[in-house]
Length: 88
Image 1: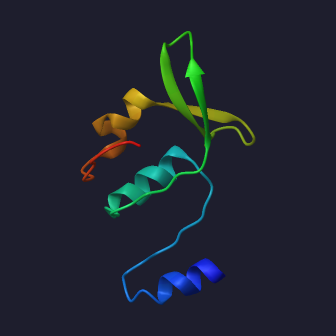
Image 2: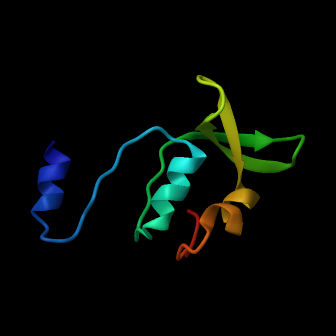
């Protein structure tokens, strides 16, 4: 509540959205072209695929994880027409 009040006091167009972290919800969010996206999720290095990934909730099986590799995240499959500047 304090954070929301502080942000509202800046007189800037600030939005806050909290929902289940699925790949579809990330794609839907990126379609509205926000200036900043802060993700809070788990991830790890997959030694078999030799790639880092973020862990999202599975859209197919409740309670299971779906891996989103960094290469897929950077691809047009996820970013579509978003204005993407950098991954931090």
